[in-house]
Image 1 (cartoon, rainbow, N blue to C red):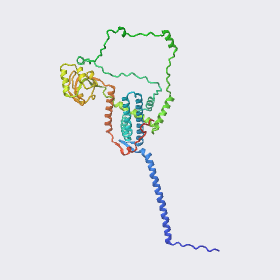
Image 2: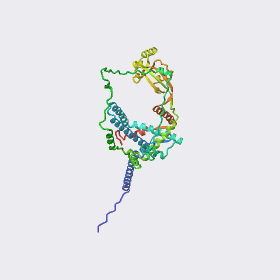
Image 3: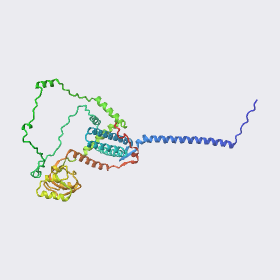
Length: 438
């Protein structure tokens, strides 16, 4: 029988060392787990920071309302897409009007402006963020004053933009555009003389037969009966309009939504955009409702020269009863009107440079000014008329926009507005890129 192995005797010192090694291994395992956990947390946070947390970061604050990155990113992409669409439209115009080099150069310059703006994402981002802040302020005013839109109004607006009218195409109403006409006074009739025009004199050969000026009448080769027979035998083909059905509208609308989906906007986002636009339009109409549609206007003419000595010479010639129109045609440097007596037509406030406007509004009808210096030269002005007149539609639109902008500036001053440039400048999109037409 084999002898049993001898039992090892573990000393206290050895036992303590083993326990120490086990403790060290345990600590290493724990440390490794902690390190791995930290790495995972950092990676997870980085992923979250670039996705969920990034979208929730505030880029601006209006009062207590926060504008978050997610909404900002969508609006920048939308703006870039619209800029691309505008550039594409200019390119189309350029092709259509390409027969004129000036037109081509003009549209090229517009396209290059868009390209330059899109090349700097922060430029587009700053514009979009300002617009979003303005929209928030307008929204606050609308809410305070009970201005809202219904879901039906939103649907009607979308359908109208697609040219779809389920209840029939509305008949456009004839809108009478106000146009001021004036009856000239005897004073004005005396002031305004016909503008001299050069009539070419044709040399007539006395030996030329009078019959040469007569129009030769060519008899038709076919008889009226034969012509009528041909007409009746030729059918008239009229194009048949394609009905715009509900199904076709829905197909177009779905395609529209899918197109916006490429830049991260869904149908809910689109309807929200329409809501904001309609509310803003209602606020605009309310704020500008009382903008004057009439103003005091002047009718004046002028003679423009380079020096004060030339201007004084013009005054001397006028005092000697020389005809205004003849002098204007001879010496005025304003080529846009010199050949029609320097006539500037009717104009209101802010239409002319300050020095000219101030002098003109101080004149009485028929009065001639002293030489008035502006950056264009020296003007001799004569006032032909002064009355309250309707403002042209384009000028009225400008006045309304100016008035609304001033109102909006005052309204924004009521709120504490913060822009977090250190946030939005780092996340502003650079897509769609220039030239990408969705």
